Length: 381
Image 1: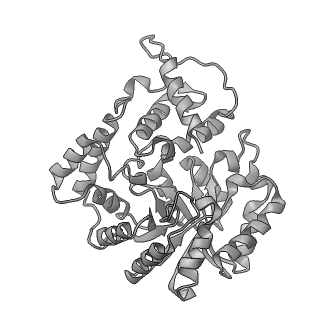
Image 2: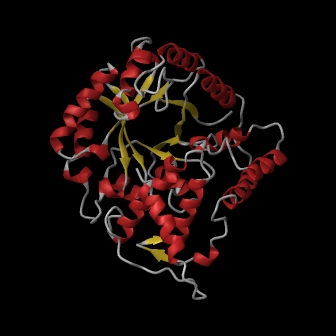
Image 3: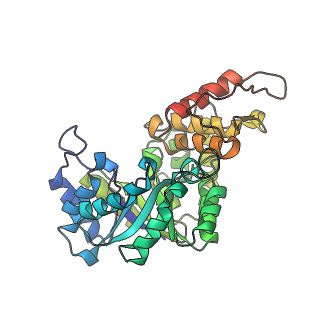
């Protein structure tokens, strides 16, 4: 059986209309009950999901309908919306009220990344200026949160420093799947190794990469079916994410009762990947990347940089985004701003200095790389 359990991501809940807050509670309640009847307990929400109403949906569908000891709830502080320290305590109190609980089982400081932790100038971002972690440590000491964590969207190097400077952090949520594992920007495997080095637990999000590892290019589908014609395409991603130790759960955003049932069936009937299957999947990654507009071979760009970021990383991220069901909402496009801040102390949303990108043979590829960089910046969130 897979090593990690299934978690219910409450970010794409069923709706009755185009209004993101008009929840279909008849279906949602069935989804919650089916999930819990299968033995799963972890519900993941946030202060900002569904226009700020996801926590309320958790209260109505989970908290008010099930004994408190029968489930665990995880929610997140909106680090990216923080401007002043006096906002912190009211937001936390509001979250407890939204959820209808006296304590939160797993509390995350949402979207930790270079621009919020260190700031663009490297002298300290909003996290440090508002003493956000000190507030969270106080809530932990008071028992109003049981486990303190962060969701991380930057380099493994930064994560290593965050965990060293803040040993109270018990778990880290990261994007983790077989495509992002060796990604130059996402660095999923390196981040996982940092978490394990510090003796912390992980929560994996995007195990199927927002559907991008369920709806794969035709060449990838053919290659996977050649390995095992009876295995579903998505099952490879689920098995990969479930093959690692020290993981609290793999989060899956579920929008329908059918998706809940399918996910439960998949998780309960799959085994971790074998060593041979891991090797075969690494070859699949090359085919996957090769299906994009840039392709998989970026060797001619090795050693080149633009605004502090490697050109190979920029092109790989752009290429990967174009292969996703929703290119503008892939995890890859949320990293470039942090790389530029970390490596060059530049704000990618301001005018960047003019730089040239010239290949070893003298070919000027500046326009091509700037196009990819511009797209990633415009689609950053």
